[in-house]
Image 1 (cartoon, rainbow, N blue to C red):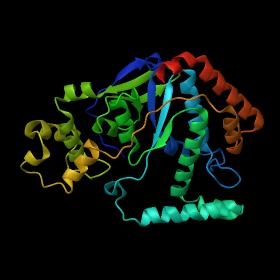
Image 2 (cartoon, one colour):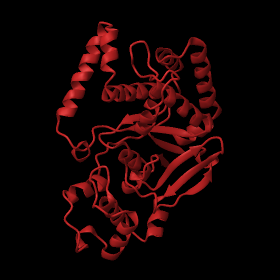
Image 3 (cartoon, helix red, strand yellow):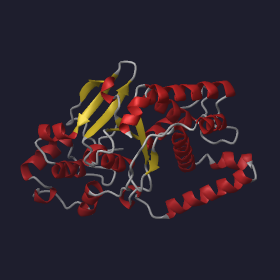
Image 4 (cartoon, one colour):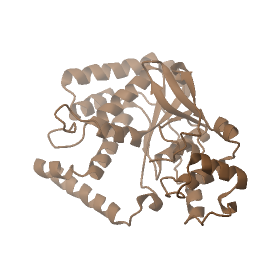
Length: 321
């Protein structure tokens, strides 16, 4: 869902060349979810003969390839286990996921296609399999990829703040609340443009500091709380600017777990990660592409494009490592 700050946040349009020789973190979970929504002309999801999802791997491969061809260094972060506030459930969800995965591994070992197809009716299992497949392919392509301990956007924001990356690409505004300095909301290869949000400019325009922006987000609702009824972005901004902090708003009922929610944005769970681009493992890439539904001719063509993209921008990539 994300925090609804669109009415308040202004962005700027830059030329795509801004990203040449830049390290761009991508919200891999968003890419996966978008890909899983794609269906074939017959109305079915793009899967292999076992019912395993193929669309996410195809989308990840070609998106990464296009970025490399533009001289951009892609880094992927995927969501890990969400905080309990976001799950809004007990540990039964996680236990159910573990049971599904074990059942899938058993069925795959004995090549029980019918059971596998039935298991992949589960959106949760399909999502997890897509992430693991994407990480495997990205590493073969030489692109850094990790599963974050919690929120992928928090991990990506940390990489930019630590100067281990230059931008975070995500359509959500949550990255601002995690303190990400520079965000790309949109990349248009056809128009050769990108849409960029700069946190410093947002804070200056709204006349807020980051702590107040976090309070504003909590006031109108985030993935971790529902927000206060009948308070939207503009009214929320007026209240924060007048009273400076949530606790100071006299007519506001206390927000449950306020300190914990603030903590999730101020010091979210992240891991130390120093991303470095690597030369692609072309044999592994071709093998994985064949496994993921590419025919031999298409896999060879895709592999050659990857090699050309990497070595044509080799100077740029070496500049970044």
